[in-house]
Image (cartoon, rainbow, N blue to C red):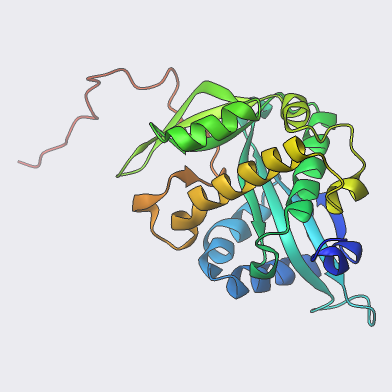
Length: 249
């Protein structure tokens, strides 16, 4: 029995594209409680009004009344944004601070999200990694990811997408054939536990600066932008001049 067993045994893990008012308010509290309220108000709320966001949620339900504001508590959430060409950009699983070492819960959320995306025939899932951040690159390579053709940039750094088929990630992580209850209870061998732990802690650390509103130092960007859709047709060739400037006489 693990330290987190009481929480994990009373937690429901589910995947959805549609959120009720109970779930949205629970997400607001989750983001505020963990120190990044702007993530909901500035990013998640606008995206939830569209159709491309997929949430894998670990929630606990209030016994009574079972509905209404406050009836749900979010313990962890995994996020995928389905963009152009059906590709999914991922945000590392976010956990409540009380679940910082709850690898069973993180693994279960990861498993449910990737299985859902595989069942929905999503061709690839990926993370946006700061170019040259070898630790994150290596962690993702060990989980079956490889550098793709998508790139992004901030004012401070360039980011490369590391992508893979969701089924390949499940197999590389060693959780594809496991029952969800075994993942939650950490009934894993040493190698499986090592892979899950390294994967989660590295990605969570890489996202920390972004969550604390310091994108300058972000080693990982959340997958909350459709990179393909934001590119101009054919890309932007080097040296392409900008639009002509109108001058008044």
